[in-house]
Image 1 (cartoon, rainbow, N blue to C red):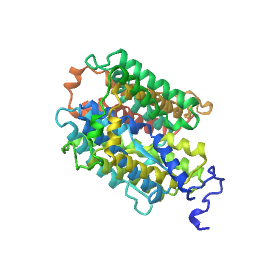
Image 2: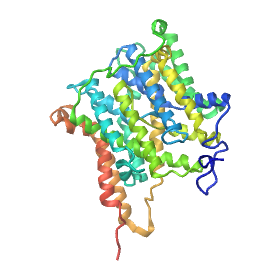
Image 3: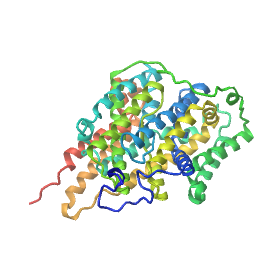
Image 4: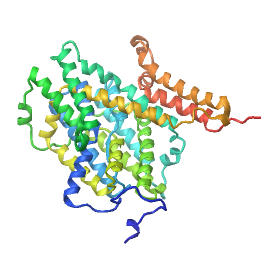
Length: 454
């Protein structure tokens, strides 16, 4: 047995199939497919982004294809070359929300959004380059991994993108199914997803696709859908360099840099969890290589169109449920993602899913993720007898002020917002930035060191 295949810690491994164990061909494919079905944002974010900018069906299909391909490439790198753990990288809600928000800035549109995202990703990638096993981002990670920060960041991200959930489920007055068809088809999708998640057994990992299919079928019974676009679509996608144009705005670059930071921090915590389950020692160098892979994915997404990536809790949950921790299962998932993303007819099928159905599924999924943020916050010791009342007040001040700063920016009157400088507008309209920065600063000033008592 080589040193790589031996457990690297004294703790017993959770997995029955180890991190470096190979799989039979049948399990290789099935476990890979199961991981693809667990990537919820994969089937939601591209459709909402494309429809948010009224893109033609061909460009929305391209967004789907590039999202799959980028996630596939980074998943393969994490599985066999960089991190070498069973990690699946899916589209990051923060980059989706930022692209959706800043892409509507009149000065540049999607071209400026993706161009600035690309430059920010280049800077982020440079900061994550491992040098002697360490990176600049890794140095700051210890200050940003506190549960109060990670939990609040998750909640702020979900607040930021909540406006694309229920409002799009109901639809606009001019939409074909407004309001009853939209509400009914979306409700069917949500009901199917919940039923399959709770009682579907082995079908659970396909709950999102099953729900989208059921909702689309109900919608089509009233408002028929045409498959002509699928039949006319080419077989394979052709990657395009900066498909939405290219422009750079320094203030947008800063916004995207701030958005990318939480993805790296959240990934670090989940990398450590998986390493512990597999009996692996996750050295600073290995961790740095994993974060470098995330940054590299952002660069590729910026060039070809897509989203930066993050580790999905659903896929981590699969590892614990199946007790199969082989990184070759996630390698299979990466290969399948590239194959599916490169097949345009498959991408066009996803485009046919009506926006109200996608948005209904997003309403459920975003709510689940929001509650995951609350679950993370439950790890914070709000009531500590030893530190008395002042220490509790410090945490409550930091979290409460940050939350209201992030949330309150969404309710500023449009005429007041327009009178502000562009950079300030972007910060206030991005709860994960305004609230996140407030939280990091207050947590560093008030909560990093317990108060002293006489």
